[in-house]
Length: 197
Image 1: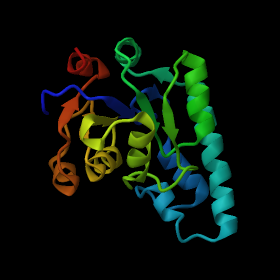
Image 2 (image 1 turned 30 degrees about the vertical axis):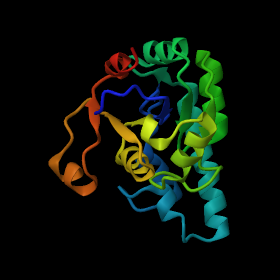
Image 3 (image 1 turned 45 degrees about the vertical axis):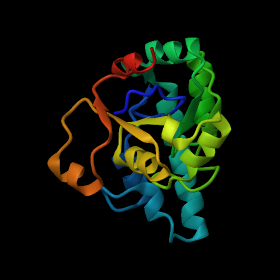
């Protein structure tokens, strides 16, 4: 990672800022989708009735998960540090806006811009990253994306951002080969504080 201080940061929500324990296997099973495959992508070719039923199930699980969420390790410290330095913060999530608002309200956070699956193509599309960069007033090259899954890294890289993967376990070689390594891997958000002197 370059020594230049990022001018903006875009965070994923679930698993990155919020330890929300979303059970994707349970969601897939309840909707009737194939196990192990991304939910939103499986619904692309589904009929309107199936999509409406799936969306209702998704929203129920997402609301329940955020209601019991805790902050991930280092989250409060990093967000306070960025706020003190007036670094703009965006949220890019495949979740819904209501959940982001619940999270922000519950923990007393304010985000400068939010992009959810309700706003346009979800990650790994770079559309959300690019839209957020514009709203945050920072070029992609000056923006850091932070997430806990390959879609976060792929979206950030495709948009031209530097990418951080939050990972408490080593990245399996197969995954690294499949989508390429992020610019930085951290075990806790606290490790990102020194990037913003």
